[in-house]
Image 1 (tube, rainbow, N blue to C red):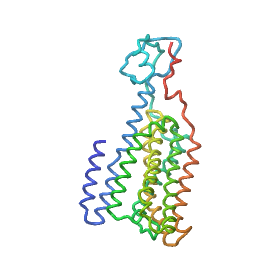
Image 2: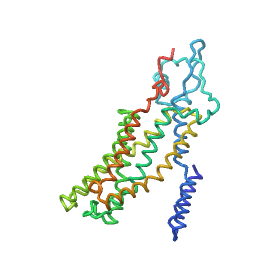
Image 3: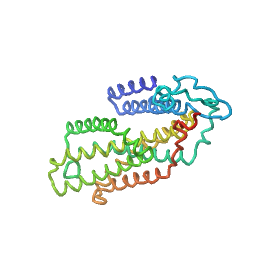
Image 4: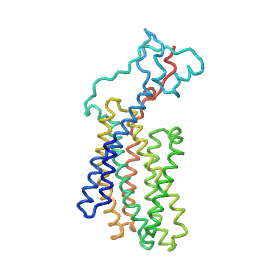
Length: 325
């Protein structure tokens, strides 16, 4: 991770100091080559979660032994709370947390993993597409169906979008995750993309009817922020779903596979979205909304695919007190 952070810093500085197109391309390529922080961090988080949640496994009713050490367990776990409340230590049987050899990657390509990877590829595609076309739509003149914002207003809007979406995630993601679960919350996030593209199409229609869009500008941006925040939850839910259904010793390989697949679609997203938006505005297909319809259709495909993702067994992620005697 330290190497990736240094690589990111060097490529960012190099990009800022670039004076030719070739230097920009090289700097941007170095960023993708040297920055693997997201995959490494996601694997590390999955390892920590596994160590916490899988502390107690393989119970055997024939032999018993006392809980060996509290430092191995999460203070919020049920076993820890039993001891904190002054109850007798639970007696466990034959704890075994050793891991075998890493299985080949082909053996991990289950139906669940394939569906997760497909959903993640759609999400990375749409994420890159939104990131690309959003500044363009904000800068597009009102008479052409855009927001008609100045460069300073665009910078302020994007900054506020990042700040408030981060705050909304901090305040509500954990609560929504507890209430809805990983899979349902992931599907809610995918529907957020449909909401984003619906807003873009609605703004285009509204500017044609009302003409002056200034009175609707910031209220529309508030609604856009809500849908944008919902779309950001997809990556978080995908990380949790991937960690839940992947053996700990294979999590790094699976995360690398998902990162590679996501990088492919993340590369195609800006080019495809830009082409569709240009084609829609120049040819006036579907009243200039062709790009939004196609991108919404891709989001709906991800929504449908994610519905077939099997849920993980609750017993694999929770400590069951019934195993104590």
